[in-house]
Length: 112
Length: 110
Image 1 (cartoon, rainbow over the protein chains, first blue to last red):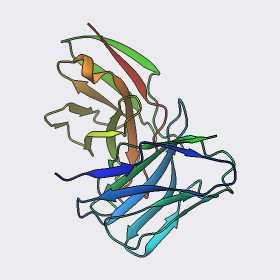
Image 2: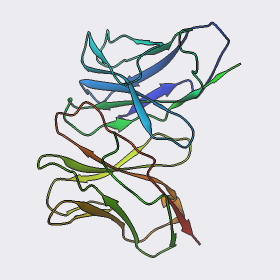
Image 3: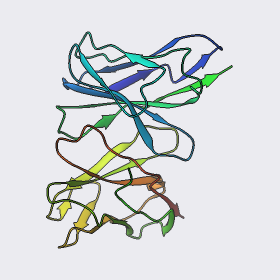
């Protein structure tokens, strides 16, 4: 059953703590993306990766980091430098950079 | 970088067709029109996309005007499960992201 999985569904972060959000896909897609969504707003691009071992900053990359060591996986780390991390985080993938993006179920991050 | 304009909210009676409009008056010749929807607290779901011609799939129909400055997404027989926020997006094939605005909140009424 192909698709995109994100875990956990809910994540709590303490002040000054780094947390990592998981995104896995078994669709054999080359490109993967991370978006952030705040309440009542649209999506904003954090980072994207066109291919393994390559990634680029999106519009709001400050305070975030990513890696792309495997085609199937694109984890996002929310660092302590991100001062307002509370949001709904969405991972997406596409066959290649020009194709339709498909989204995972999302992870909601809350700061304690 | 909003390139589309959509009504904030709409209602539709269950079983009737839902027609969701979108204006994209500055669209360029090679930009596609995409539609996604997002049910509360879930990831966006791809619905349909098109360039010039009208398109239809198992979920919906997309009608694009001849001048391509506007389009309409049609859900032929709306159900309660179609209640969601619907996003209209224009995108170059080589574009690195989908610009999701605030969309149209569609409520299907029993």
